[in-house]
Length: 244
Ligand SMILES: [Cu+2]
Image 1: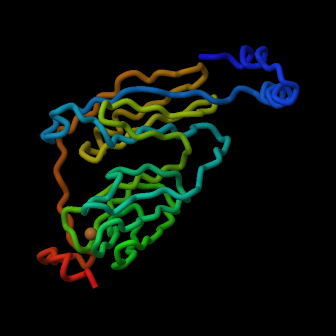
Image 2: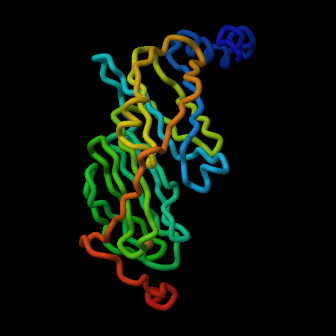
Image 3: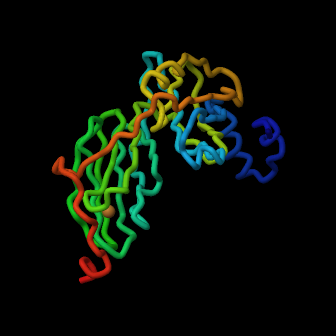
């Protein structure tokens, strides 16, 4: 990695030098926290092919110092009758936009603990937004399409990452301090996830958390009903029912 000192020594143009000099005066606060997740004991076909995506890893500050949260907008698309991404991690206070990119109507709702909401039915090319004001796990569904589901993981920290298919994660720009490391995986029991939580101290550059193995033993799929608490009716023929 190029050191800040090396960058500073290369500055030649006066204006660029002045800018870099001001940057050099800043305290070094940021680090990357990296690691890798592996899912075990799974019956999921993608996991059997070593796809370990969709696991959220976060660092919750354990000190008394409050940490500024990034409360912007995040996006969860509705496309090809899927919520994309399937797992979305955000800081508390973030607004999630749900653009409908399909040629038919969609809905997004949650009746589970975390945050209850319902954006009603909305047409192709439009979008709805929901602000998530308290931490928790929010299970999201569409009231028309029973196969559509997603998870929104609302966190009281700006320090989080979601694994890609190779299971690797990078939590950027983590300030020095002590944290509570926690993970969320939708097919792991709460007991499994709680057992993986541990305190960590971030005080060196490029902190590596190593391998985190998450077992799916004990996981039972949770069936869901529509927003009225009833069984889904037969999905409509979208091309005809909603094209006008
Ligand atoms: Cu839908």
